[in-house]
Image 1 (cartoon, rainbow, N blue to C red):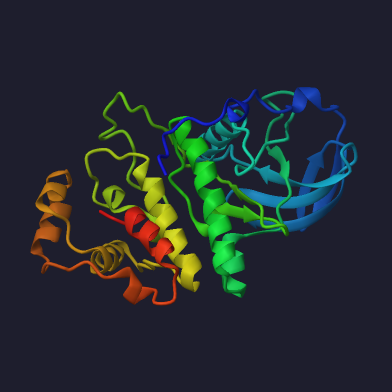
Image 2: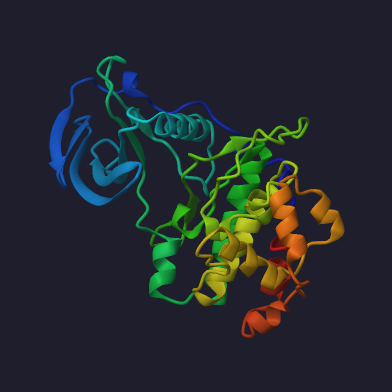
Length: 314
């Protein structure tokens, strides 16, 4: 589980994907679910998949490869934050090449900055994600092992490039019908330089609350790749019984749920908390004893609980 270990040379970050300059400039205009898509004629038979704060995703047939792909339309230019996240994701994914990380096959954009309102990112098509899967069915131990193996394999590659994902959660783990898993959504990712102190540089508000490591919530002295490992532990727990491990309703509720399971932090841990209000709050609480994972998940494989214990720990 040494996330910082190097990966094989064949899986080192690669050159950038195809850009608009490599795609014929003529475009087809098609309305999908009330939105206009302007893409290369290479992509036909557009079909709506879903949408979110980032934009809309459709599936399409790539007439060259004869495979269906996903095309994500992003309209980020009205908000600086969306621009930054979009650029960050493109820069990272254009250099990553790994079986367990979503790829960028092409980027379709306007020929000039003045004309650029939307960006279209072409990626491989994945039928669902772990969040949707856990809403509909229980996973066998074999499925849990296989999904976890792929998550950690992809995360090892990410960490080998000194990148922190910072938003690992079930909905960011894409799946297809053959149980292949790919990590997606690098909009909150950051490069972590182990030679420098990141205290005050890395922001607190990262990761969906339920999967957020306590050192982020408590504004500890910097943080490391361990924040992603914590998220993986929360995901593993959710795969064991289809329920989130720490479904906090708000900041304090989230923190209390964590402490009720992992116990109160040690004096050494408290010294690492630079947020005085957070430290004072923890000191005001009655000491909490760490729970036994076997009590919380009585039917789980002991090896899974051993890994869970190593991942979800203050």
